[in-house]
Image (cartoon, rainbow over all chains, first blue to last red; front, top):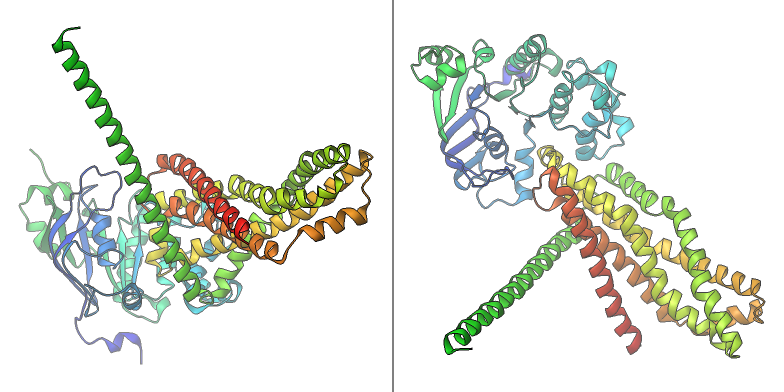
Length: 266
Length: 280
């Protein structure tokens, strides 16, 4: 039976309830946060969260991934409330979530492309890195990185580097993938590849046994995502604003949404 | 001077004393906070090292071996040079002086006290701190500033287990091994220099004096002290590099701080061992 036929309807995977997101940016002089976040992410969802730079996109995703706890409110991962949970208890739930941070995915530049991908596999299954090369190829191939497996990240084109982080996150076979501004700095051809690849992941990618992965991305430009995203939200004035579907976004009279769509004029 | 002038002068003096006391108070609080932070980090590191030593050993143990190679094997040429220099300065000089006053029977005792108990371990620790400890702070500080530590956490990899444990254990093993190597080489090179100076001291006498001056506790305390130096340097450098979010431009500041704190930590430990040596 294929993984896609196991689908039992929407089940909550990440729930943020009345959550206040702590800001971790050391450059921030004060500590502004995103407040009143009520976000439920279910299996099969494709969320697009738009916000201007510095609005707390990264903090929202790191909190949703369980790397930090909300300052207020609740974070529930796969039905498991994280309040008061120890790191050891939380780890199995956190591992079901893949996180691709921005700025090229924050790769380990002293490791090769293949080693970047085998590191989490080997760490969690305690195998030798050379014995995991076949497994790494499984994730490098769909990302178009197989020819660069033995290169160091700094030796390959800037546009391809975020794909290493994507392959690395997929190597742990997550059920949810959170991506922080994945299209930042990419040329239109590369951006198209990402949009189609993420869309395929949500529907069940052929390279991963058609296993469906829920996806949430943050962005500072809604336009490329309209065609692909399923549900949309905004971080506006430190608040979480749920927009709804594509049609709702296009209908919105909100000036901020229009700015994000590039349709606003004075 | 009139009474108003005296009053103003007395107020100014009072303000100076208060501000000086405030400064001392802030300084003491800062030191206590620093010790508290490093102590907590050390306890976490020890707990993780004990609990997870064999976890993912196919990944972590090669890193540990790499750190021993880096902090130990690659330091051998530098330690060899310093050992010869110590032999020349300490042993060559003191044996030459003792022979002039006819007290060469004390040569072994002086050498054991100066080289084995004090200078050898400190010299090895300072070399490792200068060459490897500083590199650790810069590496880990840069990793922290570039968000690589968060990436490790996102991949479910414990940064203390993956980054700190191999470095701390690697440094402890390296400082211990390098000290042993340095002491042996310094004692040998010292005799060689004494021999070249025509000091009337036969090799048999020299080594007998050394053996007579060494007690069983010297070996034990030397091992404990050098392992302690390695652990202090490892913990302090990793703490300054990793323990809190930093910006790239802060890396140089935390590096200097780590060197100073490691140095103070090693000297304090050395002082404690002097007390132990006096007692046993």
